Length: 246
Length: 313
Ligand SMILES: Cc1cc2nc3c(=O)[nH]c(=O)nc-3n(C[C@H](O)[C@H](O)[C@H](O)COP(=O)(O)OP(=O)(O)OC[C@H]3O[C@@H](n4cnc5c(N)ncnc54)[C@H](O)[C@@H]3O)c2cc1C
Image (spheres, rainbow over the protein chains, first blue to last red):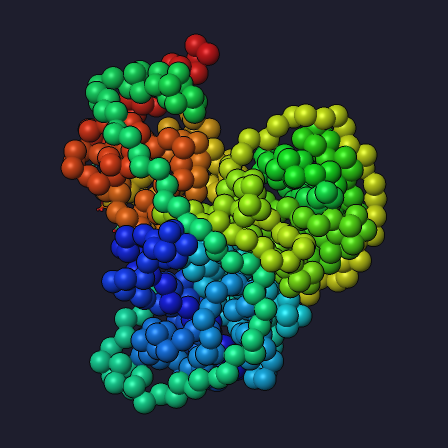
């Protein structure tokens, strides 16, 4: 089985968000990058488990610049066999999806796995876009994925519940919590990652359809109003008459 | 301007976020709604109240297969000449809107929190709610996926004309084996009121005080990450940067410290109430109302106070 896992970098979850250039750019000064948790914890680890059970290969693909290589090496240290970096700035979901789809067309992958969203732009766009480019089914927000022969069985989140579905490979799957347990790379993995192949591919100059022109921080909260723990009637009154939420 | 709004009518009744999407569309132009399946004519005509002139319905297939729905919406977009297509950014919207973006080569704005600004840019939530971004779409056709609970549905019109049509949706390549919809639970992402608890509750056996309050309020329940990780509560209740991001009208958090990753998923809530024994808990800085006290005493007391309030209102 040939598995392709999309890996994106994302600012560490404790990053204090700020902007520069008249609020038109995310200020990357001092920002530490991690592998997007959904890509790492769920997509990559489930890909590795399927490979361990059924044989095959796990390749990671990232659209990005040389700055992305530290996070790509982390994915290799966790256990991917090899990595591909498509050499361009990732600026728009459509562009990223088109680059990945163009690359995937050359590889006959049985499964393309990715996280349900990135924790910076939270778009949830790339998976569905890749699937449409490749004319493949897309299972979004999967919390379980098993493969037998040429058929995958999955649990996916739907409004208010869970659906179990079945589809033939090839497939694109976006991965959410429940899919796998986080793996911490060990020393051997980290050493091995240094010599695993990381191939740089030229970009196919995909179109960009959207751009971020300005950013804004939410208005600061006013100070908390403290309520006597003995007096919940007061809280109810405030929620009803002042906040008007009940 | 001609606006097309996709409506998920696969549930027992049409959800509030569908009315939100129609209301949003109405503020942009003349709205045609599109859906599939077997929703009653009356329920569909009802969309007119929120501003839809017409509802196109394809009765030939049911369900929420994203490939079929993409073709359905594309066919309707061609038929109506729509230049803007609106989805609710719920689980169906998240699967269909990106596909449609590729199919129509139309820029997609997902997670819109408001109407387009004067310069045409559209505000969205970014960095898990820690900031807003303004997105410019460079294609003539646009797709906007509206974050649930970003605006209130407004009743402005009367009944819409319901018209059956053929959306050329083709066949599904995904077979549904089983659907589990837990009875009596309110889906978290669309809930207006949420009661949430963290490690301060000490164990799953203590969750009764949380679910009792939620039931009295008609609220959904949520939890912090460690609570879901240790299996005290189901995964789908985990809110935060690596869980679900929600923006209810009211978020009540008991026994949650308010770590930055937790706040990222809930800071879009209109009103936050924090109950914590530790007055230094970081969550109080993000709260509108705070109760420094023991959740084991405060939650039942709040439950009683709400019951009293409900009985007299
Ligand atoms: C990459 C990454 C991603 C993460 N993503 C998320 C995420 O998406 N969501 C998330 O929630 N966390 C996330 N976390 C974890 C986060 O950092 C915190 O560890 C977590 O939110 C803490 O959960 P908690 O508040 O329930 O527990 P604790 O931090 O242990 O807090 C328990 C609180 O309960 C209070 N308390 C104790 N007893 C009582 C009582 N009787 N009555 C009232 N209060 C009481 C305590 O004072 C304390 O404030 C993430 C962490 C990382 C590193």
